[in-house]
Every structure is written in C-alpha cells, then in structure tokens.
Length: 380
Image (cartoon, rainbow, N blue to C red; front, side):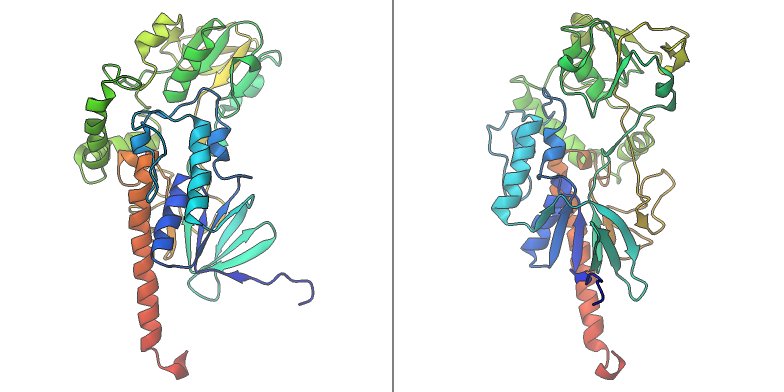
C-alpha cells in the first residue's frame, strides 16, 4: 500500500467519552449498532478527576447515573469529581463500550465521495456514516487578553488549573467571576488568604438545599422544573437558553451562596475585572487591586473549527435542533448547554438527550438501508 494507512470504516463515530458520549454509546449498543467512542483523555473520566480537589457535584447521586447503571452511592450523597470520573470508567467497562482512550480527533471532514465523514485522529482515518460530537463545552479555558499585562509576580491560574490553596503564594487573592466555580473557589481560598471576588451576581437558590435533609423534599421539585419546565418548548426555557448560551445570564449560586461568602470574609465587588493599571488588575468602577494571586473563573471558549463543515449558528454554538444538525446530514451534537432542557448541562440529562439523538441516527440508518434495497442492483 506504499506506506499509506488504510481507512477504517465504522458506521458511527462518537467523539468524546464523557457522560454525553457514554450515554450515546449505551443507546447505540442497545440497538445493536456499530460504533466507536474516541476519547482524548488517557483514562475515561480524567476531565472530572482533574478539576479542583474539593469539587463536588451539585446534584445528588440519585440524579447522577447514566442509563443502564445508577450511580453506586446513597441517593443524597454528592459525588466528588474523582468519584464521578471513576463512575464513568466503571460504566464504560461494565457495559463493554468500545472506547478508545488517548485518541484526540484532529479533523472531521465531509466525505467527498458520499454522504458520510472522514475522521482524522492520531494519523489514522476513520470513514463514518454518522458522527456524534460529544466533546462538551469545557475544553479551552477562557482568559481575557489583558491577563498577559499583569505583573509577572502575580500568580495566575484558571479554574481549570486550580486544585487547592497550596498552589497560591502568600498575599491577597482575586477570584474573577461570580458563578459556580468562582463562588466555590473563593469560599475555599478565604480560609487561608484575604480573598476578593469580582463579578456580577446572577441570583441564588433562596434557601440552603444542597447538602441538607431539605434536599429530599426540594430536589425532586427542582429536577422536575429543570427537566420539564425549563425546555426549548416553553417561553421561560427559551429565555433562559438564550441567556445561558450568550453568557450574559450567568449562573445562580447553588452550594455556596452570598451569606456563606460573607461569613467567610470574602470581599465582594459587583464590578467586573476589565483591565490592568501599573501591573495590577482594575475593576470597571476604577478600583485598582493590589493582589498576589488571580484565579480566573471566567469559563471556557468553544471551538468547533476542527469540523470541516459550516456548523456555527447565530449564537455561536453549533446549529442544531435537539442535537441534530439541520444543515449537515449525519452530524449530531451532545453535551451542548441547553440542547433540550436545563438538564442538558447536568449529568442526569445526558441520557435523555443521547436517546433522542440515537433514535434519529437509527431512523437515518433505516432509511438508507430501505433506499439501498429499492435501488436496482445494476444502478448500485
């Protein structure tokens, strides 16, 4: 073959071995369909294990299982990131899902000779009829450009790099971003450092639910609202979807709320961090902060440039309807915020979204097979 690598042929390629990709694998396997899951992590679940040490999920174990295998813990235990990572690895092993770890997909192109795709990963090519992009939105840390102008003596970490307070040097800490990660990290860091939290407040659960007995009463109600009321089919859900996808709406505080931050001594500034003056961070109200550390809890950037097809919608996210591309036949998405409901962003919502997408894949495969059966042999 003159040194060329043969192209492998697999009917459906799932890119990403997190909760979304594994849920798709469950439903594909249940239907007896041919597929493979390509995951960039060295081990399944590493993207959970590599978050900060004290991370715990906001949903209890009863809502953290994937289809076919409940999370193995007490119903109202809140799993750590490491426990979630280990659960995903066990899930894939228990169900015998065909996962290839340590395989980073470099490119997805339309197949010039047909209606499928060519997936390039690690110097190898896979020809696929369907591709499910389940890489999730939390891959490329977002740090403002002016961060590079800060005094080099200031230690900077993105929340993606933060593990625990031992990484910080002596002196005040500025945490940028008042959402889930910003609130949780600021609360933890305040135990050992003077901590300043910058960012707009976007609301909070009005009373403590997580980690309390009250969750047994309230959590089922919250789950119903997240699953059935906050969807792309309701006016309230449509508004929330637009705010979340634009990044303008922020996220309400859940486990750590304002009273907790205040009690911990966190200094809160509603003004955003917008620039640098004399090497120090500057807030929108002109306040200059003399700090030794900055933790950027500023989210992640999305990047789908590796897909060789027009995918971006008006909001910058891939154009899709419940995970199905309306413009590129055979291309699907999972793990995108608010694919169908608020729960699309939670572990517990992965199974429903995956089932819908796999149902559409099955319809496409069936239609292709019926079309081939009706085509005269001489015309094939």
